[in-house]
View 1 (spheres, rainbow over the protein chains, first blue to last red):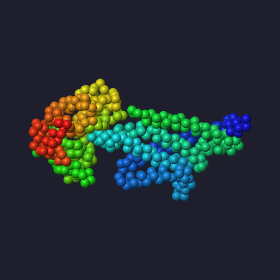
View 2 (view 1 turned 90 degrees about the horizontal axis):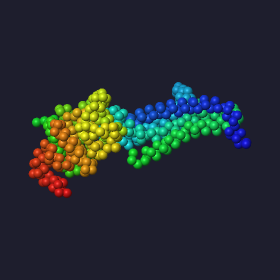
View 3 (view 1 turned 120 degrees about the horizontal axis):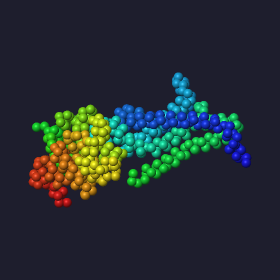
View 4 (view 1 turned 135 degrees about the vertical axis):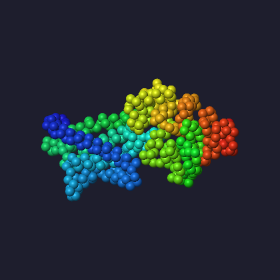
Amino acid sequence: MDIFDTFLNADVMRRTFPMLLQGLWITLQLGAASIVAGLVLGLGLAMARLYGPAPVRFVTRLYIDIFRSIPLLVLLIIVYYALPFVGLRLSPFLSAMSALTLVSGAYTAEIFRAGIEAIPKGQFEASAALGLSGRQTMADVILPQAVRIVIPPLTNNSINVVKDTALASVVAMPDLLKQATQAQALAANPTPLIVAAAIYIAFLWPLVALVSRMERRFSAPGR
Amino acid sequence: MTGFVSIRNLRKSYGSFEALRGINLDVAKGEVVCIIGPSGSGKSTLIRCINRLEGFDPTSEIRVDGTPVTTGRALAKVRAEVGMVFQSFNLFPHLTVRENVMLAPRRVRRTTRADAAAQADRLLDRVGIGDQADKYPGHLSGGQQQRVAIARALAMEPQVMLFDEPTSALDPEMVGEVLDVMRDLARTGVTMIVVTHEMGFASQVADRVIFMDAGQIVEQGPPAQVLSDPQEPRTRNFLGAVLNH
């Protein structure tokens, strides 16, 4: 079976699998770090966008629009190859994490904003009438309700972040994709690429299925 | 004389529309005031100004127990003293009934969890829904939800209770249970300002009835006088329309 020897060569698979696992570990670290940092940044941006003074709102909006418009690959290359000219030299990991976080934060901010704006005005009024501060209102009343609304889109965004970590291979990050291309070169066989693709799918498919399920459940009547 | 709640020359505009056109009102401690009037007369806007859910003209002045209702820290203090019950309940749907009642005492008054829970159970018993404490608001009827909302407001031990059409969103068979709770509350000496369409409640419970129209107080006095023997033609028209609909 020629096609199996070419694309799913058991021997190549066995030899290159440890390399791929190292790459996977880095991909997961990069993905997790960027998702968490993006959530924090996004929540901060959403607050600034909704409740900041007018100039802050304007700047936040500008930020969100710019970072939703710029292609991630372009941003990544700027961070890694252009910033050193102004003395800012980041490691491949930090470059990739910065680029992913900056963009993810912009999307997350819009998701949080939509979630907060979906909470009825009466919830804010009831909190204010009880004497809760703005911060207490957010922490105890608004965000716990908004989180339920934003979990599906946030999960979607997280899936995108993990997928986009593959772009880090262009700045010499030894992530899953980079390791796979190197293994492919070493073994002179494309099997590692197929295995890498299978690993991405194995990790993200359950999340994709989860989002579909949540979306069905949240859109179900009566809740 | 100045009242426990004192309102001086209260004005509020939405663009060129004047919602409140110079209201003066004093409410004494322990007094129960019912505000009636056609929709759009400004009665809800008026009570929403008292805890500043609505901003108002800077030349106007509202004081609660002597404290001016402004912005910032002083406002939080006033709001903690002024309870409010809304037409649409506005319970917190992600918290149980007991947690709804506990939240403000815990966060604003720094009451311990145990004390807040004990107080919540007491208040829920008082409004007749002690057995529902562990349910979520979504599983309660409208009348029960509104009684939780009253308990939630009472948990802050307010000096004044504001009611913004508390029975208007209820099915008719549930109006009575909420009015009963409010009637009991009135007997305890809490100062109450109630915007309502329930003329029966106003005539039985209110110390004073205020009729508003077009952003002004048209007529006020004891319920027997305002409701049974109104002096102003606008009051007469309104009552005629409401009582003989």
